[in-house]
Image (cartoon, rainbow, N blue to C red; front, top):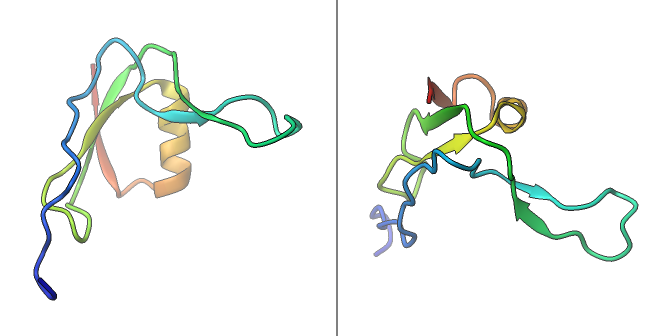
Length: 87
């Protein structure tokens, strides 16, 4: 098993063209206790796809994002991590 690429354990979910697939923190930073991750409720405008398969995985992922979550993805991963296609 060592030194070989392992198959991705998770099944890939196809892009949802009705609802953004990003997960965001619920509440503000002043919320008492731990904040929950919730799925964004906005309508997506684009589908992003990874440019190359991440290490230890065998499939390219893609997801539908709204314009605000797309901005967050660019800030986190940069411009060269994924391709963008309008819905």
